[in-house]
Length: 116
Image 1 (cartoon, rainbow, N blue to C red):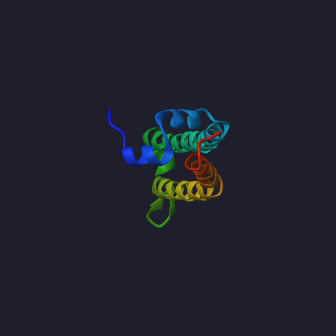
Image 2 (cartoon, rainbow, N blue to C red):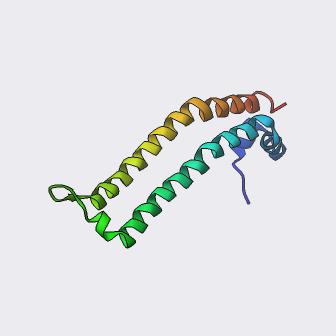
Image 3 (cartoon, rainbow, N blue to C red):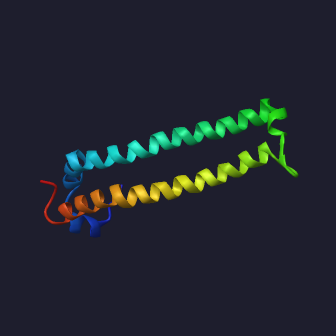
């Protein structure tokens, strides 16, 4: 296994990385990330599963015309795209306000002499 010597010279040894990984700041950053990603992933998968199950077992419901040739199935399908983009936008805002400042502060501490 090789390492990037340039990053090692700038930030220290492998031990430095292990110290950072064990630090409370890094643990808080991971907790914040997981606190967003895991629930949002579960919610999206459940929403997608609902769409698939309804498409397979509730064909009469999904075939209901809402207006013109637009039915419930088409609306649900398009809403899958909408929710994907909303989740990406929401994550971007969350990362910018929460994760990025924590990550930058941790990076600055490491580059300025370690996590101590």
